[in-house]
Image 1 (cartoon, one colour):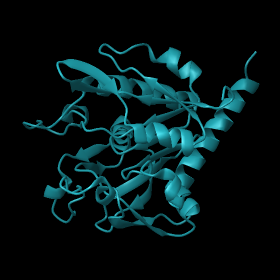
Image 2 (cartoon, one colour):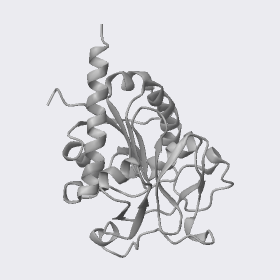
Image 3 (tube, helix red, strand yellow):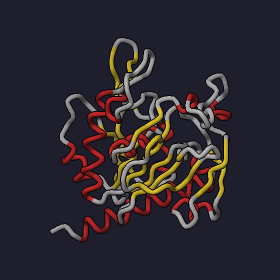
Length: 254
């Protein structure tokens, strides 16, 4: 197990009882183990942030997970927030520091849901705070009364960019995915390339334009990753990128 690449997962602040806890969804941890064939390492996001350099020197990849919170709108000129909009200022402060440093190292990054939105904002993009209120866009939220199996089941088709990374994994230009989000990309960040769109035109996936692995996904491929060939292919590709990064790092060590 010691030879496996290390993948960092940021934690989220969550009150349990009267105490704050730092948590990560188990499905993301499982996907790193079973899908990427890597070792997960949970990163405690505190306020003020801990120095990111110590983490990044150890890690071989970064998985920016989904969360119940939303990015505070002031990070992307999104106007005022609203009552009941959940935020996690510690995650914002930490992740917006981690992303540019990881990119500068060429470290592989897989970003899902909130993580997808974080990368877009880090690249200067903006978000729709409420996709379902945007004319011409569908309601991409799950039904909270449904079971998890239904919420994370196939919801709509993705139109994959021909010749893109996801099209190569899927073996075609269309695939079905789940849809569990209320926010989405309004303006794509500079230098990001569209990998997939929903039927209403909303960007559902992008990749970086540089040589390192940077893939952002609005859907959730971590859900039952070993049972869905497309989802598994995504985590396989991420794991391979992490192994290459680890190998190159070891070769370059004195």
